Length: 102
Image (cartoon, rainbow, N blue to C red; front, side, top):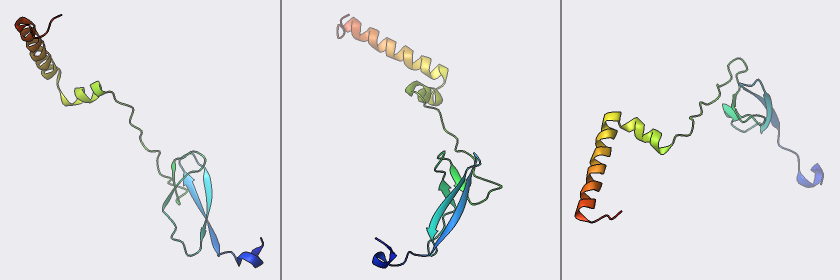
């Protein structure tokens, strides 16, 4: 199909975005479209902006935390020792009463 069958193409503009890895991404928008301030770089996935001198920094990625790491953030070592002592005492009491056999 040519333009005769589809009609004329909408007027377009090219916008250049810059990421922290110094990639230049040329994105084409319609002239009437609102141009976003940021765009994800198609090459590396980092955020890119219109400012070539100050591209946005890469996002800080938090490492995966285990359940234990989250517990240690909430409890001090002394609190953990107290909870453990309480759980051991409860277990010993149940064994004495015959509720737990092993």
